[in-house]
Amino acid sequence: MTGDRILPDDLDAVPRQVALAFRRDPSGRTYLLRQHAAYPFHVGRALYLPGDPGGFCTTYLQSCSGGIFQRDRLGVAVHAEAGAGVHVTTSASTVVHSMEDGDAAQSIVLDAGEDAVLEYLPDPQILFPRSRLANRLLIRAHPSATVVACDSFLPHDPAAAGEPFDWLRSDTRIEDESGALLAADRFAVTGADAMAARVGIHGAYRMQATLLVVHRRDPDAMLAVLRGVLPEGDTVYAGASLLPNGAGAWLRALSSDAVALRATLRDAWAAVRSATTGHAPGPRRK
Image 1: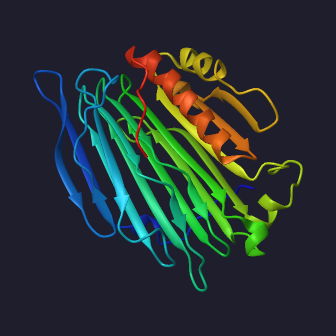
Image 2 (image 1 turned 90 degrees about the vertical axis):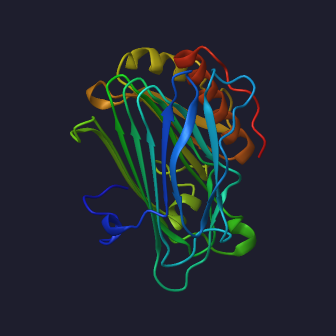
Image 3 (image 1 turned 180 degrees about the horizontal axis):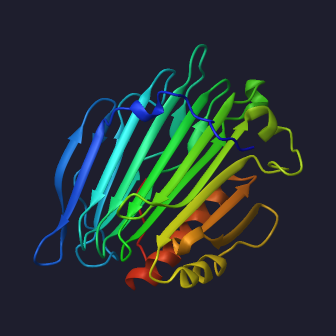
């Protein structure tokens, strides 16, 4: 379900508890240039993992609060300067807790400079019964940059809990370096609809993920990469297409199994990483 205004009115005023900036040094190694982290976030140190391209930096975001609670207003901003190679992820899935009153919102801003590679791949959000969450993702990228971003969710055992999450609302924007809109995606789904197995909404699949590959140099190549790893079988229902205005390509997947959904996302990310950097990612500890 879509609409012109599906997010809380105050989402534009969401504070930024996390602000990270990455820079490439003369040797080609990317380092964490600046960081600001306020409760409930903790920023892990810069890691350089086996199998990654030379100098590619990995950073983990962790939550000290145990998840997202009602009335939370959370914001994260990540900037990759020219030539930087950055992978930002989480140490585990994020629990969105039950809410008796009000809702929660989070805003993610990703900004990639010339020839930068910025990957923002958090683990899925787990939506508890009666949870209400509004997500906003803004990607701003130089024409030569590559940004890979994931947004995914799954319900928390609705059969055992006896009721689903209340609603999830999402607003994604992709802009060029001047702020001009290239692509937008909006959706709103209620837990009742997601759990009802209705044709045209989620059907038999209760979990959802979106992988965006902003790559304006050769969007057709990125589309071919994503379509080359689409899973077969009945556990995951997925498709890939071009983004508007030559912004890149994207994959959306529905799944009845969290492990299969995770594998689909990893395969797609690994294929994109190989195509854009020449290096397949090594295993990550979670």
